[in-house]
Length: 594
Image 1 (cartoon, rainbow, N blue to C red):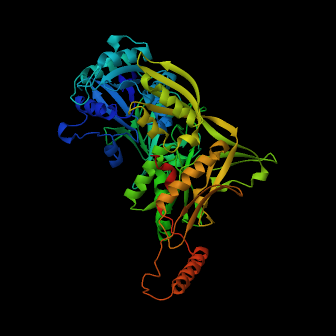
Image 2: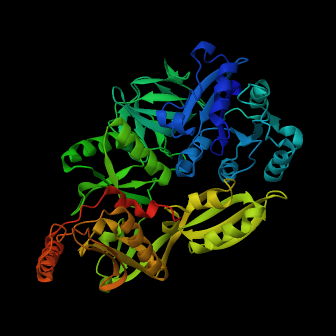
């Protein structure tokens, strides 16, 4: 098709502001999907996406409208998938910014706007949910004008649920978003903005052709991973796979390849044709590195093989998922898996449990630490139990993040206290309008991994939203806190923590463990220690069996003899008895404080 009749755009928004619903209405209005085949969140294919109302995997679709080819990419809204969003934006010339008229601008709205501006996209602001009684169109309009510097008449008012204003959105896409630039005679370059593994067809790439063209059965090459394959089928998504003879300059579509894993064709890589290769790849590619780690163990060692197979299958379609085998004396054999964030971890856990019918025990999430040895050698550990002997360590560096919280100004005080309590440093406070504030801060990632987001939502009555990106690694006074249950050190519970927080954290964890570990026939000690120094202790008292209950009459010495015998038995049991540790004990850090 003529480049001047192609429009490539995406929809960006905060979670639950109506991206997927707007995509549904656009598909209906352009006749891409017949009304009888329509269902809510059509582009969200996973059950998890439908249940939670969030987009996890982006989805491209091609629409026809007034002789124009409109290529839409429905992007994820969560911070964990911001790299996917940035690659999607690079595949487009424009973006529809959706803002909920009842909630206003949120943290992910700002983050995605910054990404869109960095990609030099034409942004069309849209106020959604104007039909809701709680909608405050005037206030949110002022917020959008303050953010984008646009005019009031540039902001489109719609209701994606009822279909109001959808035609105006389509006209604006054609009028305002520029057509793609490219040269069909240059060597082929195409940007991969998503890839997934199909059990029957192999790796399928979603890509945007920048220059040249890709024909069926071409030998293709990935420029960063240097892997080669065959384009077994090319075509567009309408929204199901629709084969075509070729993908031309400026078009968005898919390639079915003979590759065996998405690791050979990563998001952000450049595809070229082996017979006439491009000399330079497209900018912006980077390896996505996980920085949240957790141990995944089967409920029984008999299921280890099932867990191994399930993780390997899942990793075929999720190139960000990294895993290594792990062995725990208590939990047995399992895997330490790396994730992009806590939502990514939760989704992987849910998919393993649902799609592969597994019962899992998951340890407390942690981050990675850079260790500098006294010899000058550097290493990276992903679990506190991997920390070398402290006498050989020169310094320990932990990851810090740049955070951004958007909230009503009335909640500033409690939120700043929350940031300080997590060793955070407030950098700046700015205002989007008279009521909405933005806090910029830095904080150690490890302190935000467990319940920071829950606490923020609680303190701000649900109005606060949070976005972050990794800043750097900083040398801090960090120590490893070990936990002992009945004098046995449990490596899976070990935590890395700042020395100033170690005593409070040790006491907090042992008190939580006391609640979840069942009582035994003997007294169980719960202890927290740094090296050889114990910093906290709780005891779980033993069940008392009244051995004198069956006695009647007789000398008191008989009672004393029986009680002494019971005491000896309990002492012996304390030496040889084993405590059965429940799965909840390994996620005590995720448990909210009362």
